[in-house]
Image (tube, rainbow, N blue to C red; front, side, top):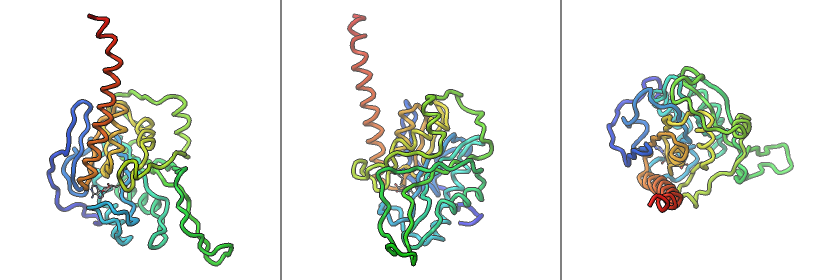
Length: 283
Ligand SMILES: C[S@@+](CC[C@H](N)C(=O)[O-])C[C@H]1O[C@@H](n2cnc3c(N)ncnc32)[C@H](O)[C@@H]1O
């Protein structure tokens, strides 16, 4: 894409649009969709396609590395445009890639993000307890060509202009224990099961939950431009933030709708069960 940016911008209608809580999903292409106000988003949390030949449906996950970096630059530019001046960006990317040649994906995408204009804050290392990336040893017990792979991913923490947050409600909902644990940049929790969620590469709810509680205020606007099964939207709804998602594959849009609706239904049921005695007392 280079310095030129996006050519065509397409106006799109929401796939669903809830008012209470505010949660909106677009079935659209993040590269071209006109669905987010510039300078409006408090926190972006996303895991883009990793270009490791995952079968998503619409998106082709087997680009050349040069094409992949062009794609990354294009969506990073959109994210930059959408973020508020004091907005933050939690970018979940792999440390490196070993399929089809070794690549320093984490370093390369972080460098691109800085070229686009983002400021670098820090990197969190996510130690995925239940994921084994070990596919080969290389030269077993020999220095000729051994294989090294770290079973971790990165959450690169970036921001637009100011790290100090001045906008929003000012209300934080993080506990002292969570704050102490999560400001240590080594996070250990399991990855999500593809089968359980019904998506080929979901992240666990724990990931957006931590980012949301650590980096945003209650009521803030959270965006996931690669919404997938809607995990970020779900975490935002659970924790009282407003949410926007963009997803190019229709069946994942439907999955997101179902996950958000199922949560809201169970919350409503819990409320009604809890409220029942009060109703009886009043009559
Ligand atoms: C790694 S997955 C995100 C998974 C998500 N974090 C979750 O928990 O389910 C990346 C998603 O980006 C979507 N995608 C790929 N290219 C896209 C584009 N240009 N615009 C919008 N979504 C896209 C894919 O269909 C896929 O669902």
